[in-house]
Length: 105
Image 1 (cartoon, one colour):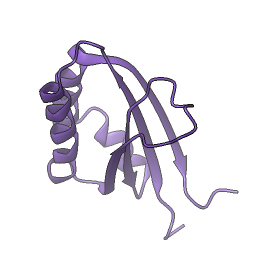
Image 2: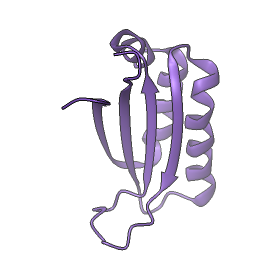
Image 3: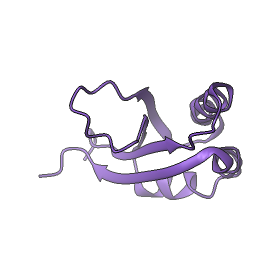
Image 4: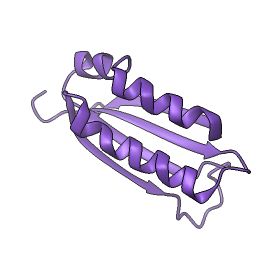
């Protein structure tokens, strides 16, 4: 599986009272994780722009890619990830996480 990646898809819905500055700080903190955590092979994120109105309140999607299950498993308890989660928690309404392997049939 040399070209396969383990994708870690994270969707956020923020509290109604979360400020733009607080949400921006979360975006920046998540974006900083690839430089802090070995094993992250790719990272991208964006905000929902779908016209289908099926997002169910989720506004932000983050995609973190790993080469191995072990890299993902090291990422989750990593102190930088845990610090990010602590920053996120006060303004988070809901989160949805799905992991999958690319190239799976």
